[in-house]
Amino acid sequence: MACVYAGCGTWFTVRLGKPLVGLNFSKEHLCGNFRYALVRFRENAESIALFGGEPHEEKEFLQRYGAIVKNSFSFLRQNLKLNLWLNFYSNAETLVPALVMAPGFFAGRFKLGIFMQVTSAFNQVHTSLSFFVQSYMTIAHWQAITQRLVAFETFFQEKETSMLESPRIQIAPTTSNSFSAAFKEICLPEGRCLLKNISLGVAPGESILIQGASGVGKSTLLKAMCGLWPYGQGQVDQPEGLALVLCQKPYLPLGTLKEMVSYPSQEVYDDKIIKGCLQEVGLGSLIPLLHERQNWHHSLSLGEQQRLNFARLLLQRPQWIIMDESTSGLDEASEGHLLSLLRAKLPGAGIISIGHRSTLQAFHGRLVVLTACKEGSA
Image (cartoon, rainbow, N blue to C red; front, side, top):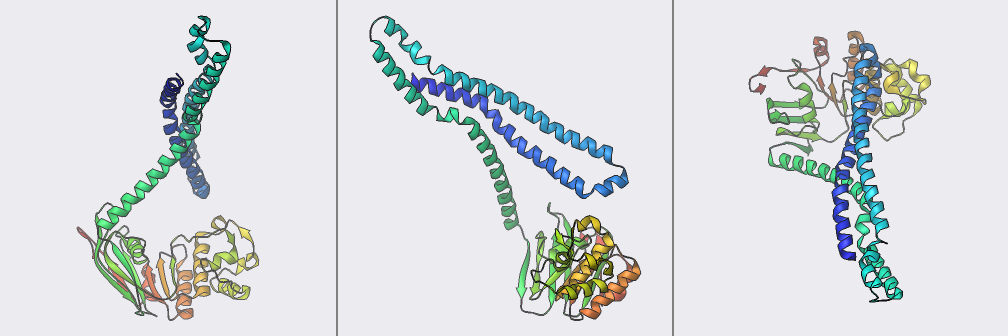
């Protein structure tokens, strides 16, 4: 009877508790999405305020939070059912042996001592077999976490398998003193060809400007050259030496202004050198704040952040520089000053630049224009 009772209890516990696994999984998913939306809102608060998009954002947050509340109430209801069953199951274990043995006891087939011994044995056997029932709440939570991790692992394995099976862009270190790339094609993740038959090369001291219509694939080409875009066929030969990539919207890590300028290098630079770099790029007003911690991403305008990028170049003196619309937030006079300064201070650096302005052509030795066609761009 102890085995039968524990078996029935386990079956009923699984039936009542199984929905908790899915609810726990959904809870992690919904709360993660809500936290992501909060962070995204904080990072773009100024743009939202300028657009007057507060009602839309409020509606979006209420929907996300409502989904969390709905999931929580479903979890509480199912949890209540399971707890009621578990309490009944635990309390009924003292009645089951008594009910089973009552007919024999009252018929005089055994005495009270035998009754107590059998009841004690029942409880020991039943307790040993009820571990799964008593621990099901913990097991359900653990199973939800495990399913989430398995889903992550399965996703990455499928991505890795698909990338291994399909042609991809190879990144190869080279002893040559030139940075070169040859692509048969560059594709989007779904397989559509974006660029075809691209061949580029830059030697120390040379500079190339890549232009083309918006959406033709200039930034994708840059990502492929940096090893961040494997979709397609081709090879990039990367020579030795420090390479820095300047994005249109610079990344500013948490820390002091000095750490902003030194990023990503781990070297500790002298304050005097850093102040000189800031002065040359037009950020002399920030010198008194060199050791101050702020949310620099919000404190500095886009133009100031792009000037800070050039200060990084002057400080760290890379051998290879790749720029993606890195002067779009500057006026033409400031853009010309920074590019001239870059060529004067780093005459041996190889530069690959992407930009739309025609004024950029005067600061580069070669021009590559990507033109759209039906099968891609050439």
